[in-house]
Image 1 (cartoon, rainbow, N blue to C red):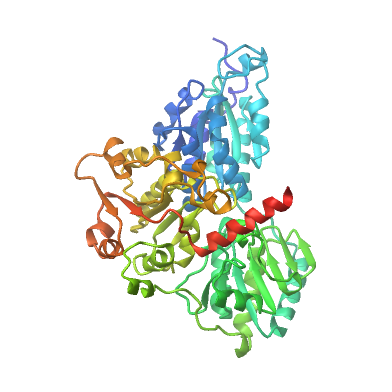
Image 2 (tube, rainbow, N blue to C red):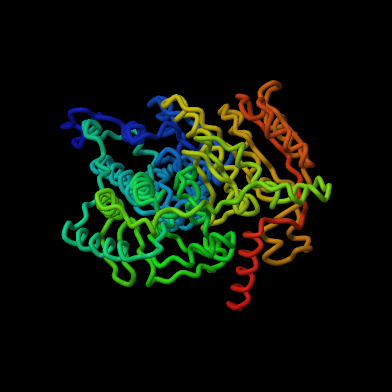
Length: 582
């Protein structure tokens, strides 16, 4: 057989699939999510061969949710699907990752380059010879598309996709044709780590913006800090923390920014979501004469139906690629360096005492409604009671719905991570995401000698969409703590429209019985059914429940027409916005 001239000069020839998976391992990916299919099977032979864990999800949608959750903890994730039928099943989750700035490398096994060139009538196609149609779909929800159709540039395209995925914090799409898996590329490239350094700010523009920020900050009588999701997604948490500590300014988080700030700090003051906030928080934020807004995403659910009452004339906005000082915008400035310079100035020139922290404005557990002798668990009672149960390093995943809003009332401990999909808002996301997050936490525990619990709060309606992923949790020995709120259906939908409509109801499952049905062996799990306040109090002080190295599954029963106040207000605002649009 003739030698391929393109490989004859290679000093360290390596299969394309080897290169791809080794590169992913280099950047911290230890597990590959996905589902096998005939166009990716040969590539999957390289996963465990390269020291990676193949997760093996129950379907591609769940796999995409899981890859999202994994990336939020580990910084990057990888998902493998097959051409057409597999990749399209994953697109909802990939779109969510794109919307919420989550770096997922989506690898799609495709038919051979020859089959595509000849337009062959293959299965998993539309039968029209168009092999680009699915790639074109993904292009709109990916920061980069890399087609590995030629070994001469395959390694370069892989590196480019992974780097852009990380830098832009959005999904990247890679096609791997079946006849490219074993083609040779130059393996010596792996000796040079990928450069994830962002483009440097223009120093003159940066200094000018910092000067303008400090000018407004020193003149302000009542400045505050408001932190949101992009501070997390674009890796500005350390710079944000330094500013919060050095300034001592009253600091708030938006719902999507929950967990971005150390809530044990004396100047942490709670969650601001417009009219969905506690009155004291709302009044304090909206009375500020200057808001240092870090990484804002002002979507409807994140602002309780666009009910922010803040002015751009009183705002300085920090983003991943721009800084806006009131109405003056500085494009091309990365917020991390700007925040650091502002903090360094404050350390040398402390702010006036009038700007220091105000008393905390966070909610506390209340048993006031216990005087009615009711044992019914309501949302207003429930969520503050989790404050004393949550620990440092916990990973808390909440579903779009009652838990996503209720978690605002829980004061986190240091290094607690919150995961929720508030912008994209795909119901069912949380269960899949919890699998990925629990796997990432397990890997971090082994690497860093930590003990990160993964805790999932989801509703019964949402759980029914992706319940099968509990099977993957069992197979991967992840042992999360799962709370399924049993309230007979889609609560957030009820409050938007159709409180008593049958389409917002779901069938009543025996939820805790699913753990054994999905294959968990006796002695490896614990299940509970909680219907009263006393039962929940007892559960939250149960050491076995809190610390056992077993999967724990809780059916938590709540009234059908009860919801957190913030959810009710957001749903009402959403309904009004829909009515106006019509």
